[in-house]
Amino acid sequence: MTLIQLSTISKTIRRQPVLRDVSFTVEQQTITTLEGINGSGKTLILKAMLGLIKTRGRVTVNEIPLRIGQRYPVQAGILIEAPSLIEEFSAYKNLKLLANLMPGVTNQDIVQLLHQFQLPRENGAKVKHFSLGMKQKLGIAQATLGQSELIVLDEPTNALDTESIAALITYLQSLKAAGSTLVVASHDHEFVSAISDKRILVEAGTAYEI
Ligand SMILES: Nc1ncnc2c1ncn2[C@@H]1O[C@H](COP(=O)(O)OP(=O)(O)OP(=O)(O)O)[C@@H](O)[C@H]1O
Image (cartoon, rainbow, N blue to C red; front, side, top):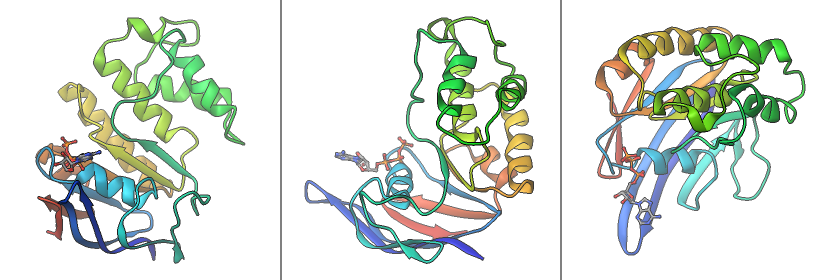
């Protein structure tokens, strides 16, 4: 079953075409990847898919046409660009803040996520003392907290070491097995090969399935 359909999505910024007739579908309970070099248009496609930017063309989610400013049709966990973290809080407190907005997410869920990403436990260090990789892991943890129906990750392997990338691959596959649909943008070819059910190559604003 199709969760998201993009049909002929185009966008021009300052007279430069940045997206050109992008069309593809995201099927439920699969991992779709967007692969491409810096500046190819991956992030803009993710934003278009989430109704965060205005484009020409049409996006539907569960067959509902997306309109900017309206409630997104499904619950989505998102990491796009830098994670939004409160530097003065611990990893636990950052996740707790988000959990307070999500019905059904327990303290145990937070503790499990901290364990999954090998982040400091409840009374651990403040985020301002974290390494870049630790901040990235906390950003991914925020996006996967509550195992949303849709999980969108932009360059999740940024700043992660090889071991952490291997753990992330297993974790993303377990989220899919538990029912989530994932869309992941990355320029990391090996990572993309390991997780993809559907691969979309993004080149200068165009997208091809490979
Ligand atoms: N607000 C903006 N103003 C001007 N140009 C923009 C803006 N946002 C994106 N672009 C341009 O659109 C193109 C695609 O950008 P996008 O961020 O989608 O690339 P990307 O594939 O995600 O790159 P990266 O791997 O570096 O994150 C780039 O050429 C970028 O310069």
